[in-house]
Image (tube, rainbow, N blue to C red; front, side, top):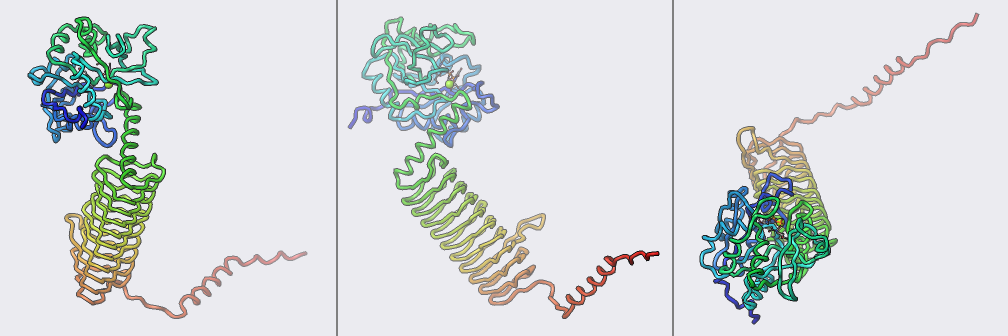
Length: 483
Ligand code: UD1
Ligand code: MG
């Protein structure tokens, strides 16, 4: 096995820098809480570090500390408060006690979320085998603007990192950038940092300046070039966020396609990281699969549908433009077009839900159908029942929600209003256009509407009356007599 994979990292403390505000985003939300690829930036970074099995992971927090800490609470990371935020070097100084006696410190910025565990492993490997004081993860970018640049000393070693604002004219050509991901040997790091002065217009202590200090002390500083330069990208602006989000989405779609999912016009399909889908499932253009959505095999999700925290069995067909949320759909269901499932709904095997049907907190039994224009809320429908077009459950009386229970093989005629609480027994019929306010026993007909009466000849009589009136009003004036 590869050395980098077997190497233990119990001598490494990971430090994620996440205390800054992110002024360039122009946002009331701290930068590391902004989302890309369906997660806050900080969560991506901490997750990328977890497989290293380091001694500990520490996040340096400051701006909106409580929310940042909550975003990574589930990931087993400690936190250190940096208040005020006097620069990336200062962030390390305030973390010294938390880092303790770890031999190595792996530093990552909380705003570079595309980093992958393999790349971090390679960086640690290079640092340890090269006996360096510091090893920097770098990337060569076509457009390096905005980043600190790496000034090489020899082929493999680094003299300094120069922030963009400090670049001399001839250094503007440098296109190898500092990712802000570094490995330091702790014993060399602390003395170097104590020599760093806040020599910049923000009066901050820059971690980047520790590199030239180490170099001037004769220490070795190495650089590892990231194989995929996108892993080094930081998010300082909204445009950076959009670019990084695009890459995450592409990676996720590629993963699903490798797993046997067909995606038409993939660049239009948005999939969150925890989503899964089975073999031979087809995703049409402009589909969104969000949250923890899980889709079975051989399903088709047609264009414009948005699924959030949904669970689908096999062979489900979601027709275009459905909005489905926090519900469960069993195998062989057909739903849509233009259907909406609100939370806690459950469509059993082979059910059909058609256009302009809204279902909330309800179960639709096996093989039952609600094909057109219905609202079904707080209801339980048995198997093989038919809910006619325009049926509405009145589940709310202005104070409380009430349940509707519809049995097996029930036929609800079109345009019926079912006033809950209500029970309709197995095999019952509801006459079309009924307002049903009382329970209907099994196999009974429930009918609740005004009785129709026909008045023979009424229409032709009415027409005659109307034509007489209109003839009067259009009568021509008599012609004037000639003299
Ligand atoms: C930094 C590097 C730059 C590098 C770039 C890569 C410095 C001085 N510059 O610039 O060389 O090319 O990252 O993305 O380090 N933070 C704190 N406490 C602070 C200041 C910042 O925790 O006092 C955190 C921020 O929340 C952020 C990270 O450190 O997550 C980096 O800070 P940021 O302001 O984004 O630095 P850059 O200007 O991007
Ligand atoms: Mg940054």
